[in-house]
Length: 157
Image 1 (cartoon, rainbow, N blue to C red):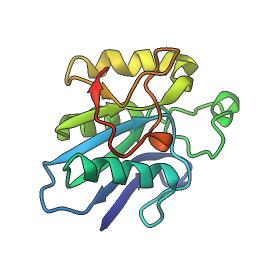
Image 2: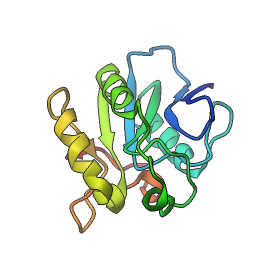
Image 3: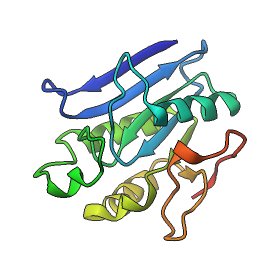
Image 4: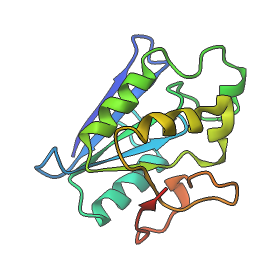
């Protein structure tokens, strides 16, 4: 499996993570989640393992992961206490990788309301692609992939 990640110089922010197992780079899905955790260009975390499983089950050759917030944190509460959790170049990379993929799955969970990021990013995405999700939470936010069954199919968001 090919693995790559795009981070800032300090590795405090991760703008993109890529996993590829198939031949066709045009047959990718983009998962847009809340924020990156520990996964990088070598290591997968549980969320990335879930994304791999889902993307393979859907017949894709790989995926890009981008996030509402580029700050790497194992606890989302850190997003509330950090001065700049979004990352200066994050929106540019969200749009870039969404445009490259056949399918875009928004999957940030209930914390997408932080700094109104879910709404802001959706407004930008709706101009360039049709966002999908795994399912909607009770709050109307798109479910995170970690606890989603492998046979779940994406639906329009």
